[in-house]
Each structure stands twice: as C-alpha cells, then as structure tokens.
Length: 289
Ligand code: NAP
Image (cartoon, rainbow, N blue to C red; front, top):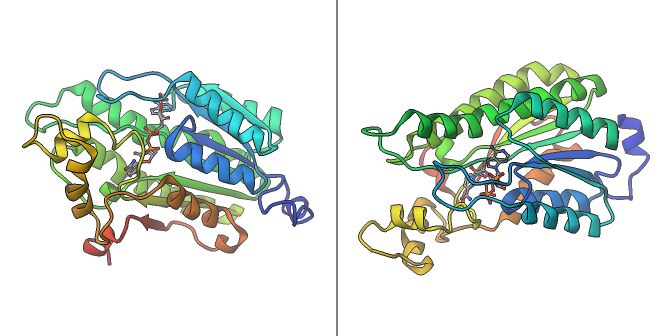
C-alpha cells in the first residue's frame, strides 16, 4: 500500500493496511512475530514446510502448528494466508509471494525467519548435511527476498528483516554449516540494503541469542551442551546456555525478538538499514565493536 494510504490509517494500529510475509511462521519466533504484527494491524502471510528433514535431529513444525498460527492471527481480526512450501524452492517462493499480492494486495514487510539448526564435525560431515543447512538458512533467505523485493521496490516502501543468530557473528565448534549460513545472511542483507536504499526499502538483520523454542529445547542441543550426561534435562543445560550470554539468563522469550522486529518495521526505523541488531543478552559484547 502507498505511504499516504498507510498514514490515513493512523490509530488503527501502526501496521494497519500493511501485509507481512513471514517464513517459518508455523511456530516459535515466526508465530510470535505474526501475532504481534497482526495485533498492530498487519495482515499476515505465512509459509512453512511443515515436515521433518533427515539432517535435522529434532522435530520440525507440523500442519497443525501452521493452522494454529492462522487461527491465532485471525482471532486478532486480521486476514491470514498460509501455504505449505519450502523456502529452498525459488519458484515456490515467487508463486507464494505473487499469490499474497493478488489476495491481500501487497507485500510490505518480509521476515525471513525459517531456519534449521544442525550439528556436524568438519572431519566427517557429508555433503547433504552441509547443503541442507546452507540451502534452508541462506538460500532460503535469498529466495524470500528475491520473491518480495520487486513488489517492495514498485511500492517505494518495504521492510526486510532477516533472522541470523549470535552464531552469525561468532562461532562454536561442531556447527560449521549453521555458522557459515548465518554469517552469510548478514552479508546478503547488507548488500540488499544498499541496493534497495533508493526505493524506500530497508533491510536489516536480527541476531538472536538463545531463544526458548523447540530449536534449542531438544535432545540434540542438550547433548551438545552436556556431553558428559547421558540424558541431560532443561535444568542441566541452563548453566552452559547462560555462559553463551553475558547477562545471567539461559534463554530469552520469542517476544523479545519480536520487539526488535516491530521496531525495525516502524516509521521510526526508516533510516536504519544494513544494520544488525543483537537480541542476545549481551553475548555480542564479547565479539562486536
Ligand atoms: P523453530 O521453532 O524450529 O522455527 C523454525 C521454523 O522454520 C519452523 O516452523 C520450521 O518448520 C521452519 N522451516 C525450517 N525449514 C524450512 C523450510 N525449508 N521451508 C520453510 N520453513 C522451514 O525455531 P525458532 O527458534 O523459531 O527459529 C527461527 C529463526 O531464528 C531461525 O532462522 C533460527 O535459526 C533463528 N535463531 C534461533 C535461535 C534459538 O535459540 N532458537 C537463536 C538464534 C537464531 P518446518 O521445517 O516444518 O517447515
């Protein structure tokens, strides 16, 4: 929608008349972003693959998860489109975003959030383990941007937010593909920010710390954190998780990332582009200037 049209809806929620596309919106952080943007007036379009992957050793989202996000958005009185598709498939992403424009009228906000977390040693990682992680976490972000950017450029307004990680600006052992993909998201987004700066479109990155979702609360990650224990529990991993942060908290809630999403989508952030916002309980104090 045009900037004038948006301005005329002040009072109806700061995102009234806007349409937000969220990848990986079935659960976790994506669901939190969808609900808050809807509460603040946006219509929502969700894409999620809703199937497990061989190289991911924790359960991914389901069709029921996606349907539940739709139900929650609609309960806020907003329209919601949801499609089961894979962010690795460029043609599917272009068809999805074009369909959103046809049905909801525009694409104003893109939250490129879908991602997977994988483990593997550089000594014996196979090609599929590497490529599935990079394809979802980096190529998937490219595909979403590629599908949305032309619409935003035409409208002379847009907010692109890519979700990286504190591991996108630092490193830990045994997650080389995850680190590489999340570092790549930052370079990709900064280049897009440059290109789109002339068209009223901002592109920024959020780099979360440990966020309390299924991505961290699972046996794979618990085992990585406490290799000394056979079946580590949530309590067992709280200490090592806290040590990744600077503030003494093991994990943050998805809503804390959503607060940064809302800010970056707001008019107040119109001159913030090409930036990385760390929502990581101070972890970045150790590694960024
Ligand atoms: P989550 O609950 O696992 O959510 C990720 C979502 O992405 C799932 O719904 C997943 O479901 C979807 N997805 C994965 N592969 C997909 C694909 N190929 N196509 C479409 N959708 C796909 O985890 P989360 O914590 O909310 O993660 C959100 C983002 O934050 C991710 O990019 C993650 O890397 C990043 N992050 C998380 C943490 C953390 O501690 N949780 C920290 C830093 C960064 P399906 O695969 O079933 O579609």
